[in-house]
Amino acid sequence: MAAQQRLICASTDLSEAGRAVRFELRRSEGVVPAFAVRWRGEVRVYLNRCGHVPVEMDWQAGEFFDHSRLYLICATHGALYDPATGACLGGRCDGRGLIAVPAVERDGKVYCEES
Image (cartoon, rainbow, N blue to C red; front, side, top):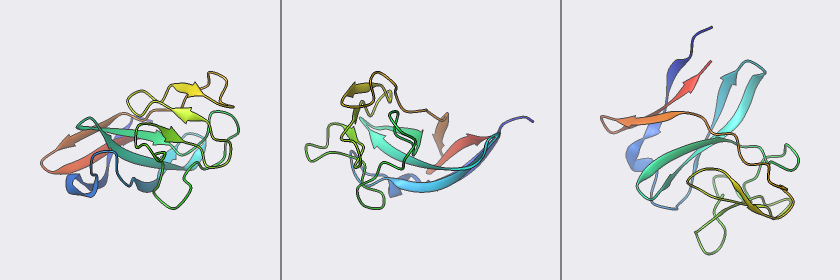
């Protein structure tokens, strides 16, 4: 099945290092939770799944950044991730990063690929 673009949100719903937009994404393994954030002006989309154990990461709905607003953090394990790449930076993720989802921003809207 070919990937399709899915509307996630308006561009204005994502502020720099701010609250994420949570949504569900249809993938080959079924419907999975995902989130979109804005980091250094770019939209980043990841599956909402810690690299350590596949649990949802936000400490409150849509809150993924740590107190410094520099890293994405798993509320359950304290694992830190690079918002730009999803790479594991420390904690129990042991080098296993977040799963990125291709996304585009155009005409004031954010879209991601859904299979």
